[in-house]
Length: 472
Image 1 (cartoon, rainbow, N blue to C red):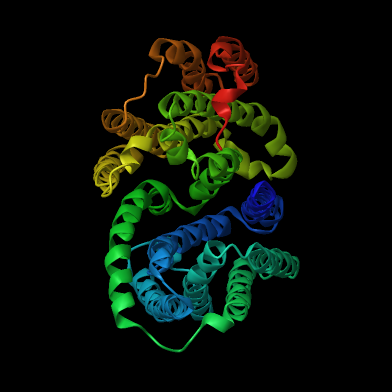
Image 2 (cartoon, rainbow, N blue to C red):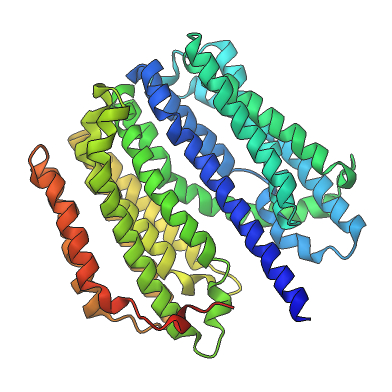
């Protein structure tokens, strides 16, 4: 019995390592290609590319079946039930992806966004192909993870990422410009779809189960509603920025977003360890106290990563990016601060997920989206990018406060408020001050001082008793 448990633990650890490595590979490939793309693409081209990335992200939020698979998979009693679920999901996604692609291209071609006016018919076709293939691929990738087929998932992601990077690099070297990225994305997603279909071919049947389709659509509509609210804060801002301030400004802002995303990726590795375990830990005899201890450490990790990004980004970016892209460094401190509020929310909102119907998630996200829209239209036309970063901080700070307050009402946790404020308020103030000292020695020195303060002041947040971290 013990031997079987050890083998199961070993397999789970290996699978977590594979998924973590693949997450780094997928996210890191784009970051590693950043010096190449910025070298071959002009500011205007990079701004257009960033706008298209936003559109692709929006379409991924609108996917129609993958999010429902984990919910309905446990209800399948036999292999035939699983075949019906997978086949219905894949067929639904492929048909829906094609329709979504046509609608997206038609809308973008007629919406009053000047940044898309330069696209030609061939590029519109490539955009439609990327959307269709990526939507069709999502349920297959989720299915491989649900069934713990880590090896198949590994080969799919490796081949897809390699195709994306190699074709992009080859196309840029041969002067294809933005077409190289679009062609690479279409080919990579088509290859991933082909591999996914091959891996799942034994469970795929060309048959729709209309009852499962109805179930899936009913469940997925709720997820899409919550995702659309988040898109206002994670995509629409860049489209508005491009429309009001031009693609070159968006390109500079997008480069800083890559730094922010790299910082978030660092925390994502830790988060992928904690999120699947948090409810199990909470139910233990001393669960709330253990969750409280871990939350304090996670908040410490978040602020440490933000300060490390602010320490390393200013001296490193000039080595890898053309000078035209570096004007956005002055926005980076407040962009990282907004990220801090967002990541902290993902730690302290645990109580909001406890009810069987977590209605506070879409409610608060919808309220934050409305608040964001008001601030965007009030601040961006007046203050430009500064208006956007100020709006982002106000929205994510308000969202953090609301989620934390509701979460504590649903699941009380005795946070040591005075100790947390003593540790985190000075670094927070440093992020606010940094834009005012840009170009001086303090811009480089203050993050180091803040990190030292955080290390010294937060020592009491780190208990030496390892038993509080046991999450078996």
